[in-house]
Image 1 (cartoon, rainbow, N blue to C red):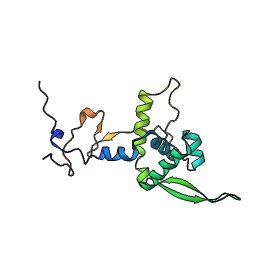
Image 2 (cartoon, rainbow, N blue to C red):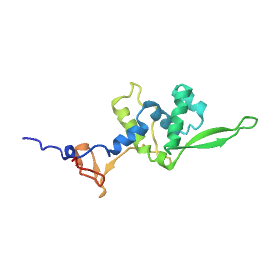
Image 3 (tube, rainbow, N blue to C red):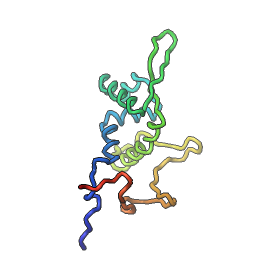
Image 4 (cartoon, rainbow, N blue to C red):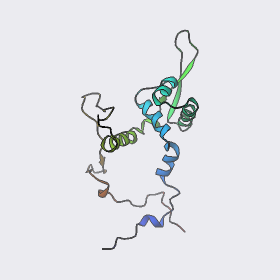
Length: 160
């Protein structure tokens, strides 16, 4: 049986939202900063210690995430200390949570050490494990990428 030529080959890939997202998030240090932010780490020194990043790299990552609107700076001052800044997730940043959970779930399945995952995610209200599901608008839960069909979206542009 001959497979049909994928329709996507007739379309320009310049408007790809995956590419646009990777342009913002694409490097490991960015994901480590987001991991820490989702785990409640807000202060530069704590992030630097937890990620092991050089200060300049961390500073650049934080600045980029602030510029992109994923983190916001919030001033704080401890008694007797100078005023400093901590970093908190914005709504745009919080929208990345399923992305990080998906990466974590894949890692827990395919890249975990012999002792198991370092972190488990539990529902705050009931304590049960949290997992991701892919579902269509009608509520059907999909078990595999083999159950989806890509179709042109409103931003799709045919190649001239």
